[in-house]
Every structure is written in C-alpha cells, then in structure tokens.
Image (tube, rainbow, N blue to C red):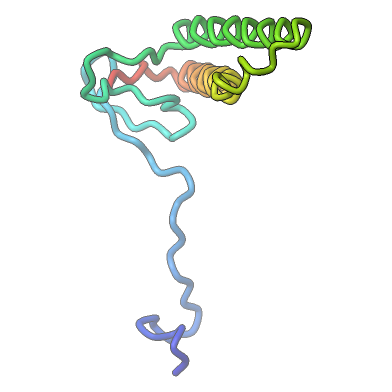
Length: 133
C-alpha cells in the first residue's frame, strides 16, 4: 500500500469527503438569536476586540473613515509637492514613513468598506439580521 493511501479505506467507489468552501460563522444577531453567516455575509470583524475603544464596523462608519483617510493621503501628496517645489528634500528623509502609511491606510479603509457593503447586500438578500459580535 502506498504511503499516501494509509488510513484511507480501499473500497471501490470510495470518495474522500470534501470540506465545504463556505463554512458558517455562528454569531449573535441584533435580535439576540444565533444565526449562521457565510464569511461573505459576515463582513468585517464585529466583536469589540477587547480594546479600550469599540471598533467601527458599520458601512457608514467605514465609509467615513475611508474618506478621512483619503483626505489624509491628499495632504501627504500636497506635502510632497511642496517639498519638490521648495527643494527641501531633507525633510522627506525624516518623515519617509508617512508615504507608505499614506498609501496603505486608505487602501485598507476602502477595502474594509467594500467588504462590509457587499456583506450588507448579501444579508439583505437573505433577510438576515446584522451580527453584533
């Protein structure tokens, strides 16, 4: 018997069980009952993360944060243009880390907004309540 076949029944017609791609995430909904959501319907993380501040996880809040992050990126672009026009490239050497942050943060914010918005549409189509944790 080949090593890869150990522990596998060798009966004719045997097909190993396949794992489901859409495993359900069971969470408490706004109405208090436990509901099973697919990962696409669940959206972004809903629990509080045990931090001091409760995270924003509604699509309206994520949209606000994404717009705010985009404005922040606009300020960074303005600063780089001013540095280029004034010729003060030494300043950029001290705050170089602002440029990657200015690129990453808006991308993360917009992707979280898109994920939650898509999840809201799927939940609305299946008439599911919003998960709260």
